[in-house]
Length: 106
Image (cartoon, rainbow, N blue to C red; front, top):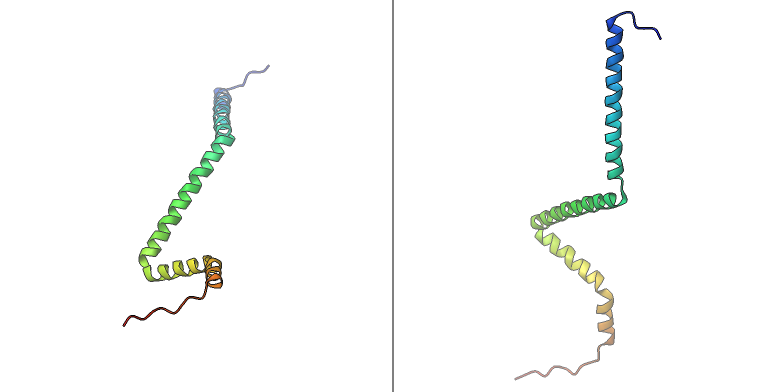
């Protein structure tokens, strides 16, 4: 084995060895962190957290829009309710019995 002829090369070799050890340590730490993050239970928990955050944000935006446009919001809600209830309302109308005329009080 031949020795490097000057101190600069020794210093460079030592610096490379230190950098290699540091890179190896960083890689081990990052690999352990990735393994922990990608555990199925942790992925599920992260997905739940993100989903609940999105729902809260969307709910907040919806409430702000409703407060800004109450008449439009009521109209949309009433229309949606009528569309959802159209079949039960149609059954009630179709199945009603003809009634006697109302007595008029005099």
